[in-house]
Amino acid sequence: MTDLPKLPLNPHLRMESAWFRAWHRSLYTAYHAAFTLGFSLRMTGERNMTQAGPALVVANHQSFLDPLIIGLAARRPLVYLARKTLFRNRFFAAMIRSLNAVPIDQEGVGKEGIRTVLEQLQCGNAVVVFPEGERTLGQMIPLRPGIHLLIKRTHVPIVPIGIAGAAEAWPRTRAYPWPAPLFLPARPGTIAVSIGAPIDARRLAELPRQEALAKLFDLIHAQKDIAEKLRRR
Image (cartoon, rainbow, N blue to C red; front, side, top):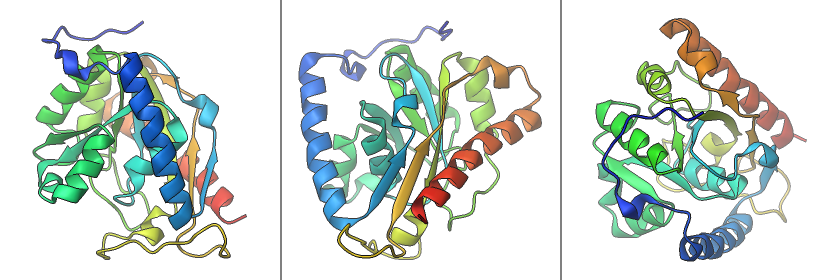
């Protein structure tokens, strides 16, 4: 049962209309084709993604590629939080806006981010959050405490996702990605993503903060391990 605070609704946030679904399908097809040409992407657990209603999608964060990777695996419209500085480049801004990116002042789950997520969830959307709060070099880092406050504020399904290989494909230290098309042998650009089964947010909300953060970390890390094994096959 969804339990969300009442917030003013913005009609443009709703993504259930037929035209939006058609637009999303066309974008999915285009991005999937482009991504396949540039990278080798392996996916598992796609059926675990909820296909309707609000959901909180939590994933490890390795690269600027992560939102696109998750979107291709999820196969439903998603909303992402992105810091406002990423919208300065017109080309990049157009791309991430097409992925339903919402600008906020900073990455992570701060006060502005929490309000934005709650507003999107109230509209029935699935929202992607990267609890680490920043791109990493591949290994997961401790989750920021704001995610615990967010979980306590909403009772929607939580979908854990693990990504492996994105840090090698486009590390934070490089200006451009390192591609690995399907027709080439596996190399650093090979990427894998694993979607775990949804869990009830109340299982985490009732735990002390540090225990809840540790539990959520383990859920995401377990999917990352699955993705890493899939990537190296």
